[in-house]
Length: 61
Length: 465
Image (cartoon, rainbow over all chains, first blue to last red; front, side):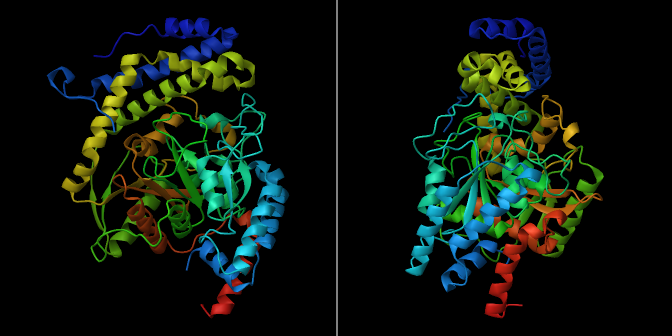
C-alpha cells in the first residue's frame, strides 16, 4: 500500500536537519521535484511482490 | 577489420608508428577542438607523455603489455587520477590532488594504456550541467545535447580524440551519450569493472563502462580490463535468438531505423520474436526511487557544507530525495531483487539469448530544450529505455545504427543476462556488420585524419583492401 506523504514537511525537515541556506525558490523547486517523484513511488507499491510475512525474503547478493 | 585499436597495435609493433607521436597528436587534437567541444576538464600532458614513452620502450623491446598498450584513452572526471583533483563537474568537489588512481585508472595504466585526459560530465553524474563547466557539445550538431552524464566521453570519442573513454552509467549515462554522439557504449555486468575510486551517484546502481568507435574496440578494451583474452560468446554455430522489446514513445526516425536493423538481422539469420519480459514501469519506478534515495545519502553531508557550490538545480534535486521514505527504498530494492531473480529464467523460458530495443526514444535535442531534470519527464522517459539494465545489473550495449533526417545519430540497444558481456558485444558487432560502415561527424573529419592515416598505412602495408 502506498504510504501517505506530506512531501513539503519531509523536504522542510531535511532542510532544517542539514541547515541548508536555501532561498524560497530553491525550496519550492525541491518540493516540486519531490512531488513529481510521488506518482513513480506509488507505482512500486502497486507492483505485486510475494508476501515477506508469508516467508519471501529479500536477500540481495 | 573494424578495430582502430588493433590497427594501432600492429602499427606500433611494426615500428611504423610510435605511442609518443600518437599521444602528441591526440593531445594536440584535444586542445585544438576544446573550444568547440568542451569535452575535457583537464588534459594530463605529463602523465600521458610519460606513459607514452614507457609504452614506446616496451614496443621497442617487443614486449607490449596488452592490446591497449600505447592507446590514448580518456576517463570521465568522476574517477580519481593521482596528482590531480576530481572535479565531478561541480564546484562543490574537493579540489585537492588525489593521492592515488581509481582502480579502473590504475588498471588502464597497468595495461600500458595512455591515460591522457579527464572528460567533462554532468554534475556528479546526476543529469545536470553545472553552469561553470558548461555542456560538452555534440560533434554531430554543436548546438545539440551530447547526453550524459558521460557527455565529454561521448563527445571526445565521437570526434576522434582518443580511442576510447571510460564512463559511468547509473541509469543510462554511458549509453545515452554514446547514442546521441554516435559511438558504441557498454554498461557491463554490475562490478565487472571496478568502481573503487569513482565518486558514487547511487552506489548499488553505478556501473563503470566503456565508450569507443566500434563494438570490436569496445570489446578489446573490455577484454583487457577484465583480463580476458579471446573469450567470446558461447554456443558458436547456434543462431542468435533476440527478443524484441517494443516500448512506447519512440520518435518515428528512431522506430523506423530500429525496424530496419531488425529486418537486416533477420535476413542475416538472427531469430527474432516479440517479448515483454518484465514490468518496465515498475522497474523504472524502482530505479528512480533508489537513485534519489542513494544520491541524497551520498551528498547530504557535503550539501550542508558546500550548498552554494552545487548548481541550483543539483541542490534542489538532491533535496527532493527527502520524499523517499525508508519503506519506499526497501520496497524498491525488493522489486529489484525479485526482477533479478526472474530475469535470466524469463529469457530462457522465452527462448531468447538477448533482448533488443532502441537505446533512447529520441535523438539528441537542442541543448536549450534538454530537461533531464524531472522524474517522469525526459529523464524518466530516457531511463525507461536504459535503466532496467542498471536495476538488473546486466550488460547492455548501444550501437549507432543510423541518423535522423537532420543527421543526428540513433542507437540500437542489446542486453542479456548477468555475465553475458561477451555475447552482448559479439551481437553488437553483428549489428554493425548488417548496418555497414559508420560515418563520423561530418565537421570533424579532419580530426580523424590521423586515424585514417594509420588505417591507410596498415592497409597498404598488409595489402588488405
